[in-house]
Length: 183
Image (cartoon, rainbow, N blue to C red):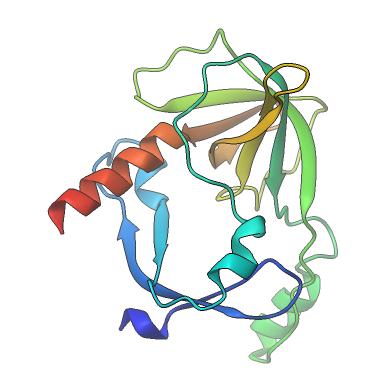
């Protein structure tokens, strides 16, 4: 079944990345963490080296100071989904004109939660529309002059006009390790 799953590459050319398995994380039913789906590329992925520049290595959540953080998602802005909804309601096919949004944000170091790996970020500007950002990512620039690095902080679970809530990279790594140990 998994050999039929394909993910489009990010290189501007529609190619396929064959998937060996996926991880559907279900261990924390109290939070939206169970919405995370991780795909593992098949060993025979022929274009792997060609596509690698379009992917980030998954590393533990960095405790380094963040110089800047960015929210990346696909918000349902006015006009983006209109044609699709009109087609859907009438039973026809329609195009979705997706718009990728990149917005500045900052980690909220004062936020405390009982949920492990749950973090909060503040918007640089108020964003009344957060629909569509779930599943997006938070990336941060860390390091010092001469050794800057961009890291994946986490995956967006939900947000509102003031805050963005994420599950951090440590949780994703934990889910992958747990799944690997079971196989």
